[in-house]
Image 1 (tube, helix red, strand yellow):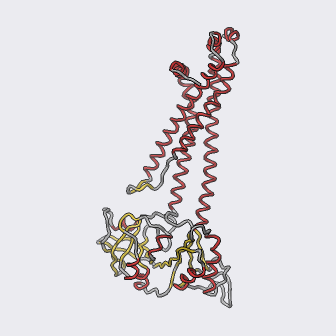
Image 2 (cartoon, one colour):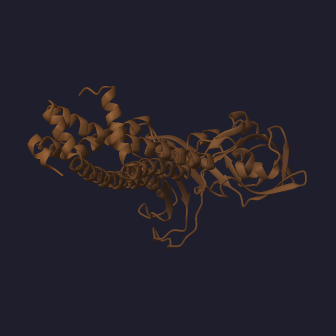
Image 3 (cartoon, helix red, strand yellow):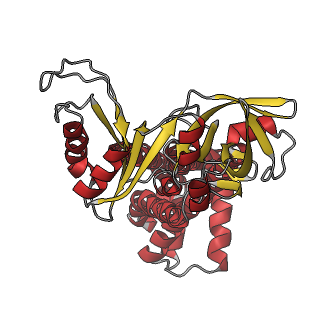
Length: 415
């Protein structure tokens, strides 16, 4: 389909002849595309924000901890309290070869951290360096705990985002500074900006202070107890398939019914990630359904208006036919007008949606870190442009067919 400069001028003249009608017709396409792109970008940003709740957690990880039993077993009544110990770590490593990382964690009741005249409430966790493979840190300053910290029981710590902002409101690198918790001074070696806002073990998110687990054992006199064991599966291992074996290994060692899911609690993050994926698959389907439905309604509006335009131009089309215009020329003219109208309106909708999404993204940026990207992918935008073009072709087919059916003699009689 060849379109020369004169054809463009004619298309522009036709569309601007009745500006209000062209604007209102194009607005249906504009709004449909805007809704589609904005919903897709907003859905992507919302998904990313929800994923922040699990940020850093390995998708094939699980957390194991002790709770009062809910079933009687081997003469023990239900409701019995019990504790895990370091032997359970060795048992899991030996009994379940599918596990990659088995890392013990200790919790304290928390306390208040002081730096100068400023203070912050913290929750203290004792971990090993391999815990970062389960819950990956986002280090804003410094480093994570290492093996030498563990072996030498160094009085070092990694603090959370909220604690950092409360103790160092002026910003800057706090590594090397000492903070006091109770009567013990700890040197800061890192600041963790991991923002898993709704999943935090042992303390409020952002206030966790990590210590070498060996130091915490000694400082808080915790002996051989383990409050939680964090595990990850090897590549290709489905964590839910080995969860019963994890529970059974721990339960039998402590005379607990292996089927007591509450007594030996296993929190499987894999299930949560699957739930999120299923949720957003449904959300994406609804977004495309609503967006395409709105676009279709806009295209129908374009088609109706083009039909009116063809009816108004009956005499003009008849004259064109009489002086030699072929049906193909008429078809090309009408469809081109429809495509131009839908493309201009549609691209305007895309640009406006991208602008709004960019504003949302800027509003979710803190300390130069973008919390969520409210944008659409390049190929999604290309797909939207293709859909707009197809809508333009479809919207112009019926009016074009009507125009092609006009006979020059009938057009001359039209008043």
